[in-house]
Length: 260
Image (cartoon, rainbow, N blue to C red; front, side, top):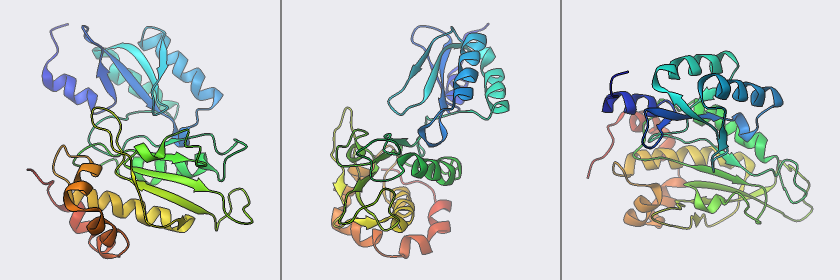
């Protein structure tokens, strides 16, 4: 096969395939819905790895199953096979990234169904907003309790279940701590906690408004936390707790991204 072009490498990266160093082969990421793979899913992933890769699988920090050493010319076949078995490659690019959640659904310390919430966010935003281009990656992390095993405070939007008086598991009136603007890597920033706990019904409006604010205010290649620090947390919170962003939703989604 002829040497791969930059456009070819870029086009498959957008589909969840990252070039393996020093080769013309790729690692492809399969994203779990709600952070859970079934036994059948794992059998399919193993089959994809044996048929299209080198038989090895690693799991990423965002719970994706990464199949190694897929030749460029086999990528479309691997995508088709996965889709036929209700699995999707993805998880890269300047968009909403795969949701992560701890096992609060079954953990003795879990205050709510973390995997159920992750599935709702996966359906509504990871899939539903997959066409929405953002200034940079946007990560969502869900923790079942303040033990913070999934580190929600190191995500752009972190959700943490809190134990309250007379608490029952998955209490519809339970309370949550929300963190915004967290990052971890070359530049670390602990997410800023919003000034009050929120109820379950508030999570989706706040998440949507955060994404809309990010798209409208951040520069291209600027993470949410950096944009908040540049503009000010007070201004961010003022807009987050109003309805203006939702009222202008279509306008914001149709606008061009900001460039420095």
